Length: 350
Ligand code: UDP
Image (cartoon, rainbow, N blue to C red; front, side, top):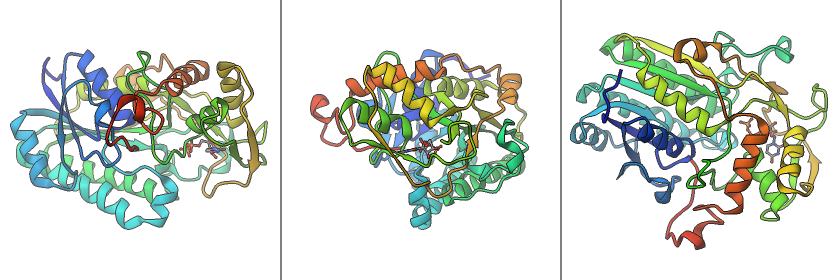
């Protein structure tokens, strides 16, 4: 159990899931210290703790931050996330996601920080086998990433397990399915640049803030022909990180768990939810399949429920879409929020 008021270093804490997690940490009585180089994160998203502007590959700066703030645990969000770009730029992805994580682990070892919670991804499973058409993906499913991004996440998990076993750290990897939605209070939300995710792109199309949505294939072997995903509200993901920090895991232990809802939603179902939240039809066209998109990815999350007591409570597609529409109507930062917030630099992914 992490003591009340303890400092938690949150790398990538100015990004989407990172910022929501800082809010949850703060509300749980912990002290988030955001460590972010703001290459993709937003200064305006840092509202619940101090900000250290530094790079994840700067091992010295990491160790100094851990020592100066007497850090009790690390949550590692920092990293690149765009699947298509990972295939074009493996150099960047291995450097930041893998060599950067090695720096974090080395600094933790030197500064004697005992626990890490790691942002992992459903992308480590790759293309699930045909028999998973209706079943839920368990943590024990075969891991064969089909993108460099997925490979960096699987490698990250293996590195943490190895550091844990060798140096007595403890690690929890949380494998996110599709993060979506925004903070209820409207202070933080999803503001990636460039945006590649379905829900923000469809909402921008519906609100007239972006061009029509292209649906990447309507000929998949699913009931309506579009891909099925497991959308989880970002506030539910955030609460899982707080639970993972407090999970009683022995020194040297490593655990990995899925974070999903067990319910699949198709692209057409997402669009219908957005149509009803916005009050007009989302303009779209049907395009070709995107490389590497599995037809169906839906998580079995019993492990997170059993071990962390975690249950998503905000993740119905209507609540996710409603909160995301509210954010996109009045974003506090990001491309559309830049003028409003008067920010010099608010580019963003992470
Ligand atoms: N998608 C789409 N058009 C877009 C973006 C995404 O049809 O402009 C589809 C994509 O093919 C996938 C689903 O929406 O089936 C979710 O994609 P997203 O990029 O949001 O997340 P991913 O599942 O790739 O992590």
